[in-house]
Each structure stands twice: as C-alpha cells, then as structure tokens.
Image 1 (cartoon, rainbow, N blue to C red):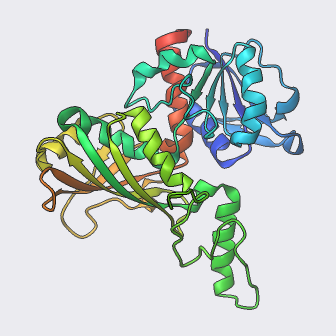
Image 2: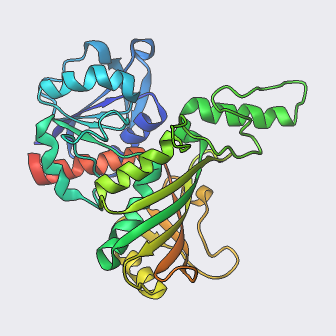
Image 3: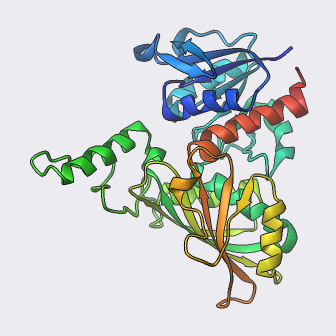
Length: 340
C-alpha cells in the first residue's frame, strides 16, 4: 500500500516541479491530488504520463492523506497548513513560515535526517530557503571532518527564485532592450534585472543585511551547528534557473583541499566537477534539471590558517525547493510512516 499525497500550489513553478520529481523518482503514491487556489481551479498539470486537474485548496479535506507538500507562500500556508496537520496529514512546507519554529524540524536529508522525528509536535516539517539548501549539503560533510568556525558566502541567485513573475520580468526586459520602443520598468525587482545584478533580495533589516541573508545565517545554524558563524551577501542575477554561490570556509583544524575534494565526492547529493582548465567547472545553465549540487573551484585559502574556498551550483527549483521536499517525504515514509 502506497501513500496518499496532496500538492498545494500545483500550478506554480515549484508545485509543478514537485509533481515531476515525485514521478521521476517513483515515489510510492497510490493517490496524488493537485491543489490550487480557486482562480486556478481545473487547471491541468502533469504528473508523469498522467494529467491531473487541480482541486480547490480552500475546500479540500486532508483527512486520510498521509502527506501534503506545500508551495503556496507564507500567508496561505498560515491558513491551510494547520488544517491539514489537524486532519492527520503531515505538511512539508516550502515557505519560510515555520522554518524558525523550535517545534518544527528544518530538514535537508543529507545533513540532518535524524531531525525527522520531531515532526510530530505540530505535524509540520519545514523546507529550507533555496540558497541555504545547496550550501549546507556541501558544508555538512566538511564540518563532520574539521568543524567549521565561519562561513562567508556570496550568492548569485536566479530570477526563478522570485517565481514566474521574476522570470517573466527578465524575459520581457531582455526583449525590450532590443526593442527600445517598448519599455518594461522594474516591478518584481527593485531595479532592472536584465543585463544587471541586484544586491538586494527580500527586505532590509536593522543591521543592514537583507532577510534573505539572515535566513542563510539562521538556517545554517539550525540545520548543522548553532556555533557556526555565517556572513552572507545575496545577489539576484539575470539567470532564469540555477543558483550559484561563492563560499569561503574557515575550519577549527587544517583540511587539505585534496582531502576535502575526496570527502565531497563521497558525500550524498554532491557531484564534484573541478578541473583547473577552461570549462572545468559547472555553471548554472548546466545544472538545470539535475538533482545534484555541483562543487567546483575548490582551493586552499592562504589568507587564513585553516581555510577553503569553493564554487557551488544547483537547480534552485529542484534541490532548493521541490527536490528537497520530495526527499523529506521519502525520508518520512522510510523512517516513520513505513507504508508501501
């Protein structure tokens, strides 16, 4: 007997990707239901070789469903997640609403699978921010070996992290540059995103950091180790899909770059592509559609006693959102619910 699964937000970028990945990975589901807002009612979405018509999230009864994967944003999640959880359905939420709740586990299965058992306090599990997810997959095996003191990261985040509106704005602005009679002002982003980079994601906080940067700090501590210090600068770049990160790590003890490379090659969810030659690294366009987090440009940092730097690339709609949610569902089924 398999699981009964609901996908809330099935018409969005992440919701559609969740359905794709459930099918690709052969998730043992007896029933999959696509849920959306009333304005999208009846919209058709793909699930493997099947087509599903969306049902109304507002009136849906979660009773009898094992899991619900949510990709609907914090405001809607605040309304519907408690309803699903109360009905006995475990919610795996992609929004930021529950990430910092001490009674809700924040999980990246490659890093802290043991946290899955904490789901029962609220029947809710949180999915981390897209920029955090790919970074901690790389940090955790290195931390286990040499203990990380400090991380400095600069992100290069694609517009798909801002949803369909972000992708449309990049597309429309790019076209407008070649057709100057048709101006496309910035709406989704703070400034023009086409042929530009914007060092501003989410709102500014009192200390000068943005909330996106704060998320990376808080989530890394919750997932790996509260003692790790993190300094982040998050930047939106004119790339449709795929987040990149330049990561500098300072350890408590020396870790040779060759040993670090070997550790990462053996770590789950990681693929090392690190040749010191033209093209011997991975860029965001090459990671689209892949499950892996790619590591390149790994090298010793001579400016600190125990430092390494590396380049990290991942499909943010996959590992940064949909894939991680499905991996959590797999972990929950394997370790806790044990059906199928």
